[in-house]
Length: 304
Picture (cartoon, rainbow, N blue to C red):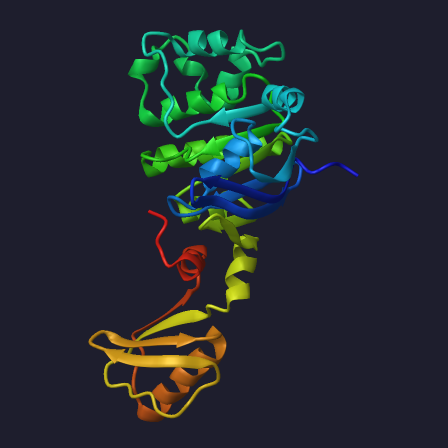
């Protein structure tokens, strides 16, 4: 049976009187994508720095790729086998893309060729272009390529699409999927809920130094029982009586807004009422709870 890529048990870290981590336990299977979410100050950076061997925990233990990053030997072995892409990375603007990759690859005994990395990231046609002349999306794909120069088994991606336009963001998403399809484990931190939902089947939400929810995006939402929102545009409609699972039904200038456990009984109730009253329904929309709803429910804050 394969060892997990990451196994953290009871990690605690204090800075003076403040607890940055308060008993964090998390397991990440080999080859999966973990999306780590949390508001600023939740403890994400401290947690990742412990896994990367950059910081020591006060309590608890961690194993990364089977090694203990708290020991000198384990730290060295972990750092040889991981790739890290930071949210803000300074590059040499006067070097070409190919020169940049070749420079960084020269630092590692185990390395990918610059040509292969550029092909994987879709920037082969930018090989002789200076980094300072790249678009934001192209530059970010260079940063991703740099995280892969040492053929890592585990890749940490910190806010990889921050500041990118939607088209560039999707190019980066494709690159991340390519990394995962090659069997490399990915830990992704992001402020975009759509990004987490589209890329990861394993999500962990941190707040105040703790993991407050973990699972698939759908599983987290379902476990909280957040239900659905139904919007109905039907001039003259009156909703009377009760329907199974309806939590609230509020009339507004643009129609009814209904909070409910499930959509099906509510839709049937609304249409039955409309038929009885001879009212036409112009529009009916069902909005199911999302990962963002779950995040706000758990933390009381938006990610941004």
